[in-house]
Amino acid sequence: MIRDEPSDFLIVHPEYGVYLGCHQGRGYWSKVCAAGQPAAVTFASRQEALAYMASWPVSPPPGVELLPVISDGPGWATIGACVRAGAAPWLDHFSPTANDRQRAV
Image (tube, rainbow, N blue to C red; front, side):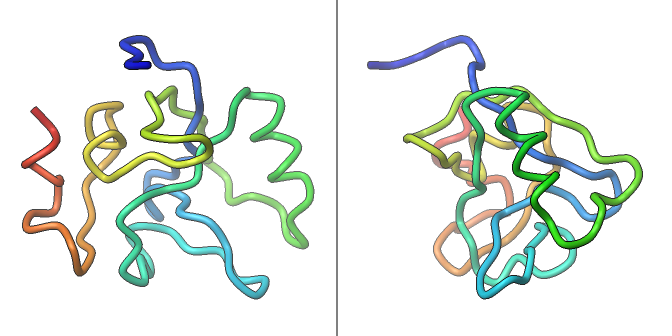
């Protein structure tokens, strides 16, 4: 099913970029340490994203926002999907451009 209306949410920050997810208790952001991630974690509702951030051992940084996005699959959105939603692009090892241009159009 192809969706054309955003129904999921990204966690974004003006300085840190898109929240990509966590591994072994460490959070990864697209502008800080993308760690080669070609996609970001998405949340099915604002409430789910807020509950997730409330579970962090530290408070979310001031300025965090939730950005509506069309996810590529359950719980994730590619760089291209994030860019189409209005997030800043980032680089990973598998995409030829920072905005995943081959899929962004």
